[in-house]
Length: 290
Image 1 (cartoon, rainbow, N blue to C red):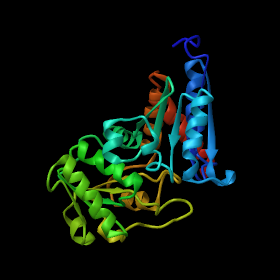
Image 2 (image 1 turned 90 degrees about the vertical axis):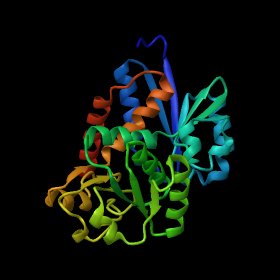
Image 3 (image 1 turned 90 degrees about the horizontal axis):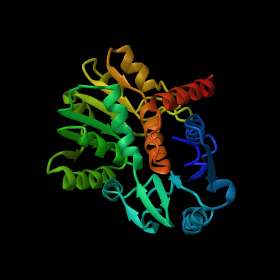
Image 4 (image 1 turned 180 degrees about the horizontal axis):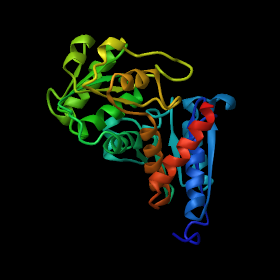
C-alpha cells in the first residue's frame, strides 16, 4: 500500500496504568513496515488525574484532532459503549468495546479481544477436542474469550469466577446467544476438571505482579489442553506445570497480538502482517522479561 494513501495515521490507547503497554509499539512498527507514518499515543488516565467520566471529552478531542481510532482498555471497555454512534454485532453482544474506529466524525465500536483469542487459538491449538471446556474468570476479558470459545465450537463451557454471581450472569447471556445449556456457571472445579477436554485461564493470576497457580496443580491432567491469556510473563506458572505434565498449551501472546492485528486492520483498512507483528511482540516480551 503506497504511503500517498496514508501519509500519516494517528491513533491512541485510553486506559488506566497503561505506560508499559506493548500495543503502541506493535502498531507503530507495523505502520512503518507498511510504508506510512503511524503515530500511536497512550492516554493514561492515572497520571492525568482522570477517570471514565472523562471519556466523552476524550472522544470529542480525538475526533477533532483527526484520530483514525482508539483502543480502549481497563476500566473503560463498557463505559465507552453508550458514547458511540455504532457497534459491531460482537461488541453489542459483549457490551464491551476495545477498538473504536473514527470515520467522517462517526465512532464505531468493535471488540477484537474476542476475534483475537479465536485467531490465536485456531493457530496454536488446531484440531483439539472442545466437547467440554472449563474457563476460569468471567471479567471483561473472560466474557470476550467465552464468546470466542463457543464460536470456536465448544459444546459446553463451564465458567468459574471468584464472584459466582458474575459467572452466572455471563453464562445466562451466553446461553441467550448460543443456545440453552451451552454455558453454565461452575460450582465444583474438581469435578469439572475431571471431565473437561481443556482449560482456558482468564484471571490475573500468573502475571509478574501476581505469581502463582489459579487452581491446584493436581487438577491438571496430561490429557487436557491449556490456554492462557496472561502474556507477561509469556510462560506463566500454569503453562510451566501444564507443559511438564505433557499438556498441549497456548500462551497469552496470541490474543495480545491478534487483538492488535484486528485493531490495525480496522484503523488503517490495510491488512497487517500478523507473523511480523508476532515476531515484534515476542522480541519485546523477551527484552522485558530479561
